[in-house]
Image 1 (cartoon, helix red, strand yellow):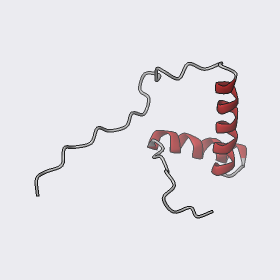
Image 2: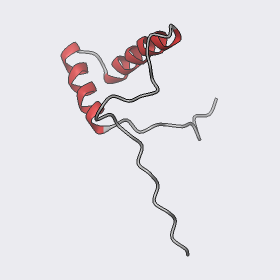
Image 3: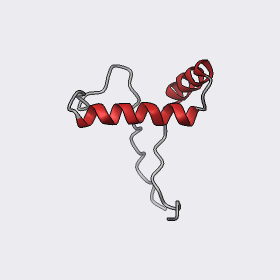
Amino acid sequence: MSQHGLYQPKIADEHIRQLYQWAKRLEIPMTRLVNKLLAHALARLEQGAENVSKSPAGAYCRRKRRPKKDQ
């Protein structure tokens, strides 16, 4: 299966810094840490344990796009 065209969301810089620090402390690769965290969070979502409709204060928000200028 080709990986071209797959959606790759931007991870907020502050999360990258924290993930890097935790991966270093735990002495595991960042990708392994992220995959473990996502697996845990997704399992909890499946169980209905999380309310994802509201983001915590200071959470990463997608920037609004600027209107395109006329060419």
